[in-house]
Amino acid sequence: MDNPLISFLLKRDHLSPRELGILNALVQRQETVPVGTEIVAQGSQPDHSCLLLQGFAFREHFFRKGARMISAVHVPGDFVDLHSLLLGHMDHSVTAASSCLISRVPHGELRRLSHDEPHLWRLFGVVMATDAAISRKAVTVLGRLSPQARLAHLACELYLRLEVVGLASDHKFSLPAIQVDLADMFGMSTVHLNRSLQTLRATGALEWQGQEVTILHWDRLAELAEFDTTYLNLEDKPR
Amino acid sequence: MDNPLISFLLKRDHLSPRELGILNALVQRQETVPVGTEIVAQGSQPDHSCLLLQGFAFREHFFRKGARMISAVHVPGDFVDLHSLLLGHMDHSVTAASSCLISRVPHGELRRLSHDEPHLWRLFGVVMATDAAISRKAVTVLGRLSPQARLAHLACELYLRLEVVGLASDHKFSLPAIQVDLADMFGMSTVHLNRSLQTLRATGALEWQGQEVTILHWDRLAELAEFDTTYLNLEDKPR
DNA sequence: CGCTTTATTGACCCGAATCAAGTAGAGTGG
DNA sequence: CCACTCTACTTGATTCGGGTCAATAAAGCG
Image 1 (cartoon, chains in turn orange, red, cyan, yellow):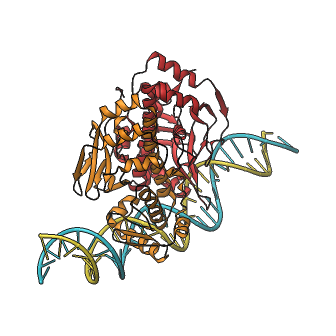
Image 2 (spheres, chains in turn cyan, orange, green, blue):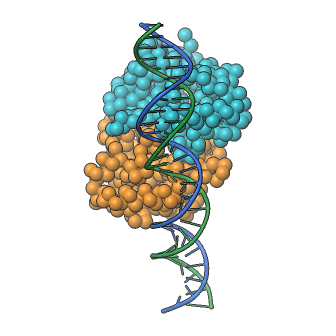
Image 3 (tube, helix red, strand yellow):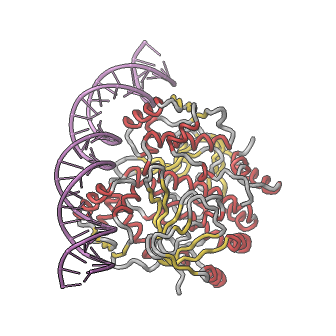
């Protein structure tokens, strides 16, 4: 079994054999959860952080009137609530968007690591900081891009993030999100999302049928989304 | 001179005398910058992180067509680009919204700290994680709240964040943001922002004239904004 | 094959952008 | 001190994006 967190980190820095060993030890306790499972509950105070090994998950927030907002899409290799180690109660929930394989890492173990493994712990900081950078980007995308551009941006981002963990290649990847989910990622209605998706398809820059996304013209798509990879920190250098 | 970062951290955990000493040493190199200064430049690769001691700053992102998006408001005590230590190039800029007093902390010093001061470094993780939580919240606010509710949410959030560093009390605080800035925080037009602000004022929950914000009815305002303090992690406990 | 979920389309209306103009202060210089 | 100017705020008119409601098509699935 390979460990997508290692792929994530190797893309960004070097790992010593000892660090590799520790990282592999983190995924010993594996667990499979079905679609729709609330992996992390809003308001809870977890004693562990959850590493996503296979499948997709959504970071969700619910409003009083029942509206839902998806503030992040998690892919394999994401430590979906690493911040729960440092913070108190969860301000959001995480839900399995597909069947998922996860590993729950006790906070005690992580805290020990923060004492004994400065470099690895700094890399976990990179994990959190990258997650934060993605959130920041989501704010700007949400605020100032057209619906088509938002979709295009999501496609570009997911392609690169999935490529890192070997789940995207050849300009194709799959995303277990129905149109309601996509609408909730962008704070819009399903009807309008559907129409925006059609407009985007009409540009010919990508195909998007059900879960299968195929990028036909990366350059055009990136142009449309004003996509700039900087925020993903895909740079292998000492951290 | 007091150090607002210490106020920020003391609100969330205990600090040892040694840690207090280190934190005070961080703010020795002070610098005053005038309004409008680009404190941190998008695309740059800083060799230091910038701690805001006095004044306000905006995290900004510019688009091709010239549109601006403000993805965060920074208040005294914020380590505005602590993440630049871990990441590569800046994906956003930070601009002084008022005259600011800042301290630039060399990354070398921070890296040393990450080795020698596990607890303090973990607290710096709390700083980053709180910033990230605020970004996540911004996503949901932007996605699913009405303009009035967004403004109300901003008022609630800033009141609490400023209170921590002694800059808000008695239901009043001031914010050096003109309406164009507010519009750019929410991705809307100035005209519409102006009208939304008037609608909000008409509820009687707050007064907002120029830079002065007075919250008249916290409960009503929080209700309107569906405000929940969880994400600010205002809890004093071992981290 | 029926049933449920998902995707798509149409009609209608409201929210929000844009364009354009006008008002109010604050600062500046004669 | 007053005219001038600049910036911020406010208002009106118009247009268009996007939400809501409602119905229909398609696609899974038991």
